[in-house]
Length: 101
Image 1: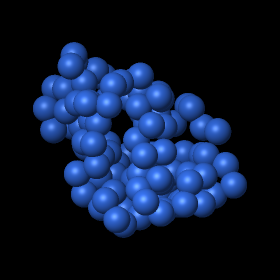
Image 2: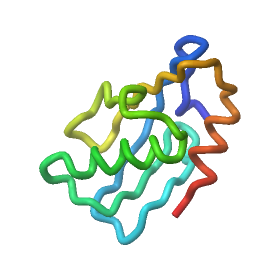
Image 3: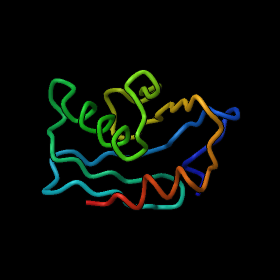
Image 4: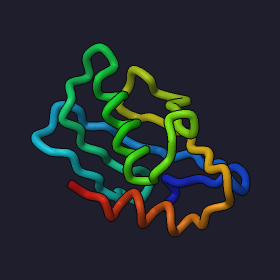
């Protein structure tokens, strides 16, 4: 599970691979990265917005705590997540993966 890297006590980087224009939303653990299936097409930033909203909803964080730092126009992305309090790595993994659609 090297897709979630802790950068400090409250900051994490999440490696993902996005599959836009899928029939349903789904999150799959592939070991080195998470594969996230999105309904939106990769046009006019719609898939990126859906991706951030999905992760925000699963982790129960606000918009200013998450951003795409790499891969804005690519399928492989790195997401920066900042929690204002210290959070256990396993809790984050459980929240992200257990919310499959």
